[in-house]
Each structure stands twice: as structure tokens, then as C-alpha cells.
Image (cartoon, rainbow, N blue to C red):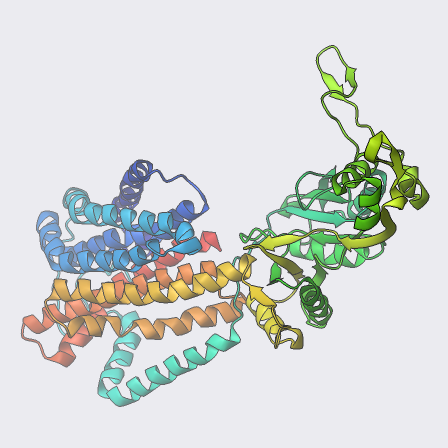
Length: 631
């Protein structure tokens, strides 16, 4: 569409349209050889590369059109055009590869994300260059039509109608740009000062932009986690789960709900439940997924006796958006620090559903053996533990009775009744085997009482750890994490308590750190490639001078869209580096050609700016058109 609008030539449009599949289809073959699958990152790479894949073909086609307007026949126009922009096309493709390959070689968790992404972009760019240098000129020589001899007279209109408002240097619509460029060349110091002011202003925007990891968007599925106090029955969990389900069904945006009570594993049990909510398609509801969850949170507070929260859909593996993990060898200091942090986090705007794994306690039967009395009666600690375990937990040993079914046997668990387990006198009167096969009451050899203990004990590197988690509402991950770090409970932590990086915040910090190195390596790669291609140390610096000034547009766009600087924004900045470098190459390369023809520096720059405006606009708009569907 971009080519059709600018060149008004359906033949040229067909040539560019053919270049796209010829570049993408071989990329799939190489992906298969490398063992890559079609996942979010590889598909994102192909989606972002669509705009870039046609850039090389656009440059070739536009230059052929310009040579045809000079009166050349299609074959000669294709030959001369290909020779003229050959270095620029190769250099621009090499810079794209130089930008994305360092991203592919990042280590750690970011490397797992970006390795297939970087290689996919690099591979597709290689095939795009081959198509632009070999197939596009060939098709242009046979498909494009000769335009006839055109006479150019300085200061007069052309003898033939224009094919585009930007197709010639004398076009009235291009004169404002020519005048602006001429003014900038006459007032170089003023132009440099304006550029530096814009760059400094761009840097000042960085602290104002929130930092995040991944914008989950509207996926149409929300997961609600319900946690009751330890010690409740499955019937209690089912009852509260049903109450939450009835509240959720009141929303017209809900399509279906899948409820699951209980679970297996170290963090699940009969006191937990999960509700998977499928929302109606976006066209059939008036609110987004985030608004839906925001509306339900106050309603969940109407259900007493349970923690109800939405599950994070981030990549960090935690159940909530923000997870602060503390670890220590001292359980007392650890729990005190976690409780203080939990209370102070409730004062931070934007943090909701705050909970700590240390704040839940489960009822316990505390049995403390008396070594002296146990020794007198011949009762061992193992016998005390075995008796208490059989009474409270039960046993399903192989020699015990089983319930026989036609196809299998079901072990029968032997234990005392639940009501009796809650009676401390029943526990005290349990009989423990002693010496000479005598039975001794449990209270005779141990002190027995009811108490409470932590619902779960988590460890990291053999140290006990506690997680304080929260979901985000109206704030970014970076802002929330920084706010937590400034709380008094974290400055300083109690003796022996340290913070352990975890979840999305850990991945975000690692990605930002590694991306800085990848950016630096990408800039070095661009410079090295350009030095080799242009055989000069100065011209690459001229080309790369535009890179810092492009940052302002990216940051300003994030502010206008009210988006966080996250993983996808970083990908966009990497792509922007490649686009800016390609545009600079087109401009500088043609300037060098003009200088080689004996033109003055001012005349060469003016000629290059006006002549390369159309291909730069076309390639930039093609890249924008390729990325708009992703937004």
C-alpha cells in the first residue's frame, strides 16, 4: 500500500509484494533446522520483521522508478539502480543483523526469551537482502515500463506529469522540506543546539517513565485463588468457593467459570481453591480484563475467613505480580521482618491483595517427651511419635485391611475419629508401648497441649524464606518495587535477614541489565560493519549520529500511550535503532556519491536529502505499518 501511494504504480507494488513471502518462507526452513518452534517470541520477530523485509525491496524499486523517470529503459534502469544503492542496501541489512544478534546472545533468563527472537530477525533479514539484490532488479527489468524521455529545465515544470508528489526535486510539495534543510545547513550551530536540547530533554524523560516487565493485556481469562486458614474441611472450602462463584457470576462480562477445590503439592491442600474465569469476547463486553478484576476486588472482601486474590499472568512463576522474598537462619527475626513489611506495604498506593506466607498459622498438637519418665517406663521417642502419627494421620500399611473392588483394592486408613482428635483428653489417654509389653498413657511420658505453627515452611539454599506478595492496580512493577525498597522495614532488615530476588521483578532487573550490554554491543557492531563497508572511520560516526536523537521519540511515545518501559518497549527500541541506521545510510551513501561527482558539500547534502526523502519515508511507513497490528 505504501508503494502504491507513493509511486502510483501497480507493477512496482507487485514486485514488493512478492519480496515479502520470498523472504519469510526460507526463514521458516532455517527455523526448523535450528529447532525453533512458532511461539510468541518467534512470531513476534516475524511480525516486527515484516516492515523491515520489504524495506530493501522498496529502496531498490524506488530507485528504479527514479532512473526510469530519467528516460532510461527498464533494463538499464534496473542495472544502474542496483549498482547505485547496492552498498546502501547491504550496509543497512548488515546493521539490522548487527543490532539483533547481540540480543540473541544475552545469557540467563533474558537469553532464553531473546535467542530465537534475535536469530529469527537476523535470518529473515539475510534472505530479504538476497531477494532485494537478486530477484527485485530482475523483476523490475521485466515488469516495469519505460516512462519516456523527460526534459528537466531548471526553474520550469517537467514536460511529463508527476507520478508522485515527492517524485522529483522540483515538486511543490517537497519544497518546504528543501527550504528547511537549506536553513539547517546555513545555521549549523543553531541546528546542533536544537538537536542537543532535544537529546537532553529525552534523557530527562527516562526517570518519568515507569518500568515494567510484560504488559499482559486483555487475555480474556482470569484466575482467582482462594486460601482458607489451615485446618478447615473440604466442605468449608467448597462453601466459600461457591460464594465467590456467585459474586463473579453477577458480572455480565463472565462467560464461564471452572472451580477446583483442594489440590496436591507443598503449597496446596484442602484449604485452597481455584476459579478459572473465562470472559466473553471483547466485542461482547464493555469492560477490559483489568477493569473486570478491579470491580471484583472490593466484592471479595465481603467474604470473611479467606484470602481471595487474582493470579498473576507474568513470566516470573509467582502467583502475584510483585513478590518480595526474605530469607534467614533465624525464624523469629524472619517472621517479624515479614509481618512488618506486610503491614507497611499496605500503605503503598497501587498495591492490592497483599499477603505473607508467614501470617498463616495452622493448629498443631504439641507433644514434648519427658526423657526421664520415658526412660523409667521403657518408652522410646520413636514409639511416642508412632502412636501420635497413627492416631492423627492414620496408616495404610500393606498388612492392614483393604476394601476390595472388582478392578482394584483401596487401602483402608486407620485413625481415630475427627471429633476425638480435637479432644486433648483423647490424645493424652493414647496408649504407648513400654517395657515388658506394657501400655503406658501418653500423658505419663510427655507433655501435651494444643498450639499453632507456620502453615508452610519454605527454604532457599537451606535457609528458611518467607514471601510477601501483592498484585498491582494502577501502578507499574518498577514503581511498586522501588516503593517497597524505600520502606522502613527494608532499611535496614533485621540482623541475619536478607532479601532474595524473585519473580517478575528479578527477571525485569536482569533484562534491563543485560539489555544495556546488548545495546552497547549492538552499537559497536554497527560501527564495525560500517567501517568495513565504507573503509572509513568517520562516515560511520556520521551515520550513527542519529541514534541518540531517536530515543526521544520512543520515550515520548511511551509517555503519550501511558505504557511502561518493559520487555516489548525494549524490543521496539532495538528495532528503532535499526530503522534509524538504515535511513542514515541511505542519506549518507547518496551524499558520498554526490561528493564523488564533484559537487560541493552543501549541494551534495541538499541533493541527497531531497532525493532520498521519498525512499526514507516509504521504508519508515512500511515499518510502521508492519508494527501497528501488534499494538
